[in-house]
Image 1 (cartoon, helix red, strand yellow):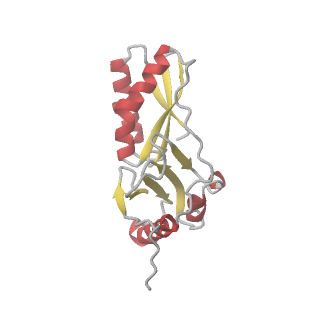
Image 2 (cartoon, helix red, strand yellow):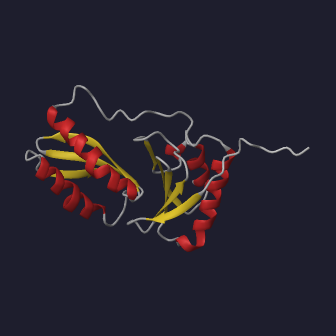
Image 3 (cartoon, one colour):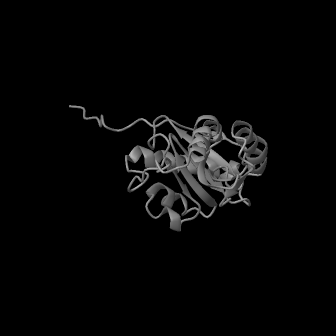
Length: 194
């Protein structure tokens, strides 16, 4: 009699480039995290509760790991070439996902909305979610609201956006212009932790 493991998930994983030449987006055929939840691991210590990211940091060429929706963005150290390492990274992610182990030990919800936010902050968060977040996610990154004070909006750029040569242009030409146009009280937009 033939026995088969019917619980084993078939994982399709493909790679996608993005504006950051040091990052590659590894896209799975299913959701890895709930919608709107993301995790950024800038180093091995930050990945203590993320088994897959911890394993990836064992490679000396990995600089940063980012999880969101159905993808994992991996940023390599500049002195390495993707041609030499991308298949190894893809294989590692594939085997890990096929094992069925969780990529994060304890999912922490993104507390993006707070009923105590001012009307301006609520509008800023709404614009970021509706207009800006989808485009940033397409490139393997994430953006989230950090703070607002006297006309200055601060945002967090994560994933492939972190350290990307074009993130400053995106921030000023795209995000800042859109927010200024939609909310005249906005004077500038700055990135935190880039």
